[in-house]
Length: 208
Image (cartoon, rainbow, N blue to C red; front, side, top):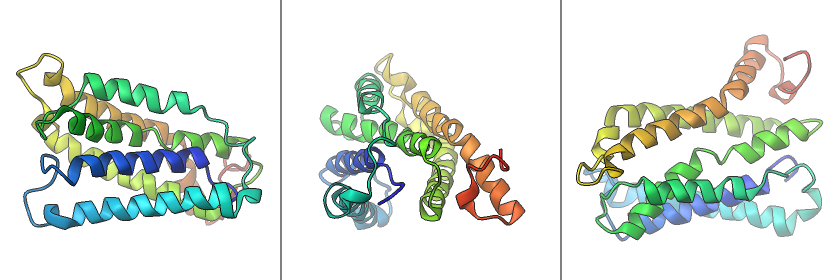
């Protein structure tokens, strides 16, 4: 578990739990085709199991390989801001406020979950290939998510409320924020690949 952020992994557990609480008993945020009957719920359940397993490995089975002095990003900068924004700016597709807030909280929190891992990267003397490739995969998924919401964010707006009429725009802002957060990492990752060097050198002074 060397080089993996426990805080990021815990955040992904919370994201999965909140999203499952929104899409299992309700259908407001699910697609209308058959994938909304089981696929989305299954993917989130698998994500929860994987993230939970990583948290267990870091905290219990391989605790001696985890260095908390490197993983210092404050949880207070992750969870409270996302929760406050979710309470203020959430859609109403489930027509049940707690479930709507859970879905929105998961979306907003997921936008900034990579911050602890990026901070850990900056403090570590070296990085592992697998964590770099994981973050690259996350960057790709965030780009695809951004493209999706650009085409459909208006569906989240609710003109019956002044605040809710801007929900879709907040989603776009959060989607754009996650790309900005990962911008430098994406640039350095592409440079490593273009130069044919190992991505473990992404923090090397020669790559800056």
